[in-house]
Amino acid sequence: MPFLELSLTIRVEQQPHVEESLNDLGALSITLQDADAETPDEQAIFEPGVGELPLWPTITLNALFDEHTDRRGLAEALGELLPWLEPDQLTFHDVADQDWERAWMDQFKPMPFGRRLWIYPWNIEPPTHNESGDEELVVVRLDPGLAFGSGTHPTTALCLEWLDGLDLAGKTITDYGCGSGILAIAALKLGAASAIGVDNDPQALTASIDNAERNDVADRLAVFLPEDVEAEAADVFIANILAGPLGALAPTFAAAAKPGAPFAISGILNGQQDELLQRYAEWFDDLRVDTHEDWVRISGRRRA
Image (tube, rainbow, N blue to C red; front, side, top):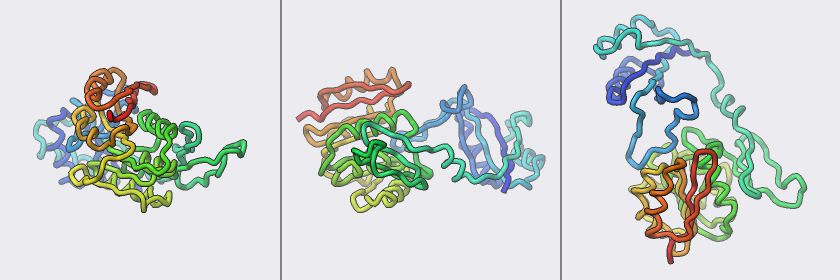
């Protein structure tokens, strides 16, 4: 069905009260964007830190309502709940109905990472070998759902390429900030014996298990909220979150990796790597930096 969209720009400290008021007035969904971003790519917060909800100083808030909602009545009711709100702060748009799942599928195409790893949308049947027929492909079939991680973002691409370059046969791996489960599942398809996925978003854990089932590896993947992890150190460790949490969690990650274990961290903007290199040098050796667009991956090995 079509929808009525209400948009307004507010300061970050106003967000909780505004969002609560819109929910009280019957909003069907609410999304937040960076009001100062110049392009859509700059508007996403890809992975919050553990227990954090990072927001921008100025936010554009978009709320969807039933198409028959009275605009004037909605504006007046919102004005009563938020007396400081000016009428010219509100804009209304009609949003046409569409098949959102189909729209996502139309944009998500098969993508290669490294030598033999491919990510495919779950509804496209992949080939079994490369074009020359001399090498078997490793294919992850994916539906990100509500979680972050489809391979389209540079940080995910950096991590997938790194995994493709490892010998994972029989290894255990921990994927911290697992999102859709894409990295843990890719590791399992590349030969890892078992994987642990950790995320602070329960929807991510659900998406990870769902995608693991699509790839017939659910029996080898266990998922946990950060506070529930009780696992032995892994043979391989990877984390794709953000620079702030990566710095804060460095001791935790060191404890989660066996001596000599290869590790990689990403979600790092170019320019943030120097502080993290200094931080991780306390526990990890052979540190190196690789970049893709404006994003960085740091990799190395847990000190023996």
